[in-house]
Length: 266
Image 1 (cartoon, rainbow, N blue to C red):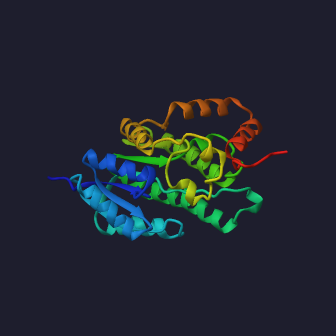
Image 2: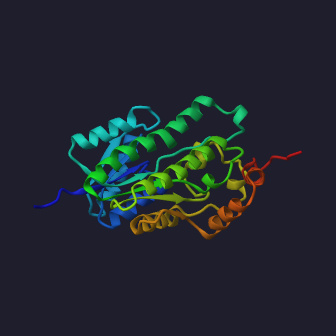
Image 3: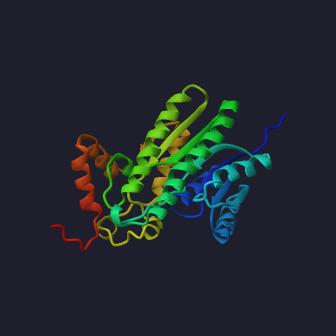
């Protein structure tokens, strides 16, 4: 009996690392379901990816909304589509000192970076376990490995993603389903504009990583079934340093990297 076609589902698949991952999956013959808020960007991305010879389904969905992840899963199930790879890529941050930033924006970020990711992971994982086959790639960050002044909520959400991914991965060991965390460093994407972080030292003075290379590292680790991959030697060294520093020292180190480029600390 011929098997139904399977799909790779990518959230935030129209730009940045998500877009580069979509291209890599398409180049390896994976049919795609890409999810983003902007319908015109979805249409444009779909045309580009279809030219690579795969089927591309687009679903506009705002994963900042509480019910959106449930609706996305229900929509995919109603269409009878089988997702054998889930890529939880969508995520955002907000720059600034926590006492001064917008709490409602931060609650949205927690919804997107944590709650929607947890919902999609649970629902699609249950299906994968039933079939005894599947892969999940969660976008973590080297931000998960150190406290993050100027981005305290974002770093906190990524620490959750990292711990959550490793915990669930252990629970499903030996089932045929694997979870992998991808940990990029500061990458040349639209993230910093959306986070209003363009004046930070890390953007102004640092060298941003190439999203193509980050996506390649993530794809390869996922297909190998690795638990996690830190993309880039510089980022591996930063994480190794953070791991041996006390949290207070790691936070101070991150403060110096992320403060505004024109900041003069007393």
